[in-house]
Image 1 (tube, protein in one colour):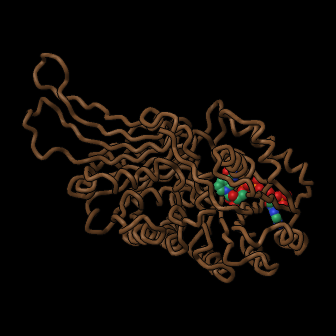
Image 2 (spheres, rainbow, N blue to C red):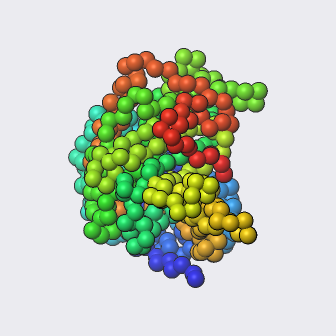
Image 3 (cartoon, protein in one colour):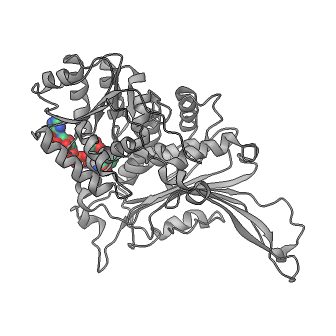
Length: 483
Ligand code: NAP
């Protein structure tokens, strides 16, 4: 089984921030992978832009080094040289007028032009305004906007309003790279492409749902930036919220951008406010090998959380009574992202008490080893009577799909190709982002108003003890964090 790669239409992609970290690690290597896969048409061009002044040749050297560092699988060096020929660089300050005329000369009128705003959000408005002013915005234009999209409802609204002055909503692609992950899309395929799960996908059969995104790294070099944000703004408001939406949403009538996004929006609007005792915030401590969060953030009095666990209720017909537990943090014991749908006990055990309590759990792993596992109860083999054990029905994509799984594009590459195709399904709509902030703001204001300090937790642990208690006191427990 070899996946079909359909080339996209010819395009010019301008990367503002083309010399930055994101461009170097993700965007440019991702584009090269799509080039190697035959998805980028021969006439496509990529134009880096920032205040630096490298020549085209110097920029190509920069991109070659980035590709050599980050495309570690089989690399076609002849293809790399051809890919580099498609690259150009223009020196532009988002806040100045220089360079725009040169960019206008380079960008072709008769192909799709996409502008990737891979710069600080404070520059998004300047870029939108100048693209318009210099005649670079027309019906063929798309803009790609990176996170963070605001830091509260007010700033997100202001940003939406600024972009809306110059671009139609159908031209704005707000990236949440979690939505570009293969497993996340498979979540929709599994839910809506099989009859098996959907009848059980509700509070009658699901006891609770856990979403965990755990990292082993600390905030390191990003400490000062992270300290103004914290886990709630950096992870929950966007990535975990998107995962929750895809799990909880009603089946859209079709797999089209607005049908899917309408359903996600309904979920966000159905979220109850979260009670303070349903939230546990944490900050990692130091040990002999690693420094504490406060040292990383260079802020000895920091009240910012590097960990958060919370219980969320979705108040609608399908989910009332089935809590969603979310947990994310840094410097935890393993790097893993997973969603676990924990089903209820069978209503009656014909095997008696001694057979034990067994639950079906559907685990959807985003990383590592993308795939799904369904825990099924069977008889323990052997002559020892009817004793029950749980075994996994395992569908690790790499095993199930062979080379196709290896060839699956990474999140950024897939999303960039979707931009060129004009498909907004996997991008957040403006009202979705605002609804997410409208739910998030009072929670943050609550703990800020109370001056609450996060609990400390040991590096390499599962977070603060109170996070375990959040579930224990309700007779549930978190799944182990492991890779
Ligand atoms: P970065 O490494 O600091 O790069 C910033 C880029 O912006 C550089 O190319 C810089 O080049 C350019 N720039 C700065 N001021 C400019 C101006 N006035 N006019 C034009 N260009 C300007 O930042 P990054 O990590 O790549 O992040 C870029 C965006 O992606 C941010 O919004 C960030 O939040 C988001 N993001 C990043 C990551 C990541 O993993 N890095 C992940 C998710 C989201 P010059 O100095 O040459 O102008």
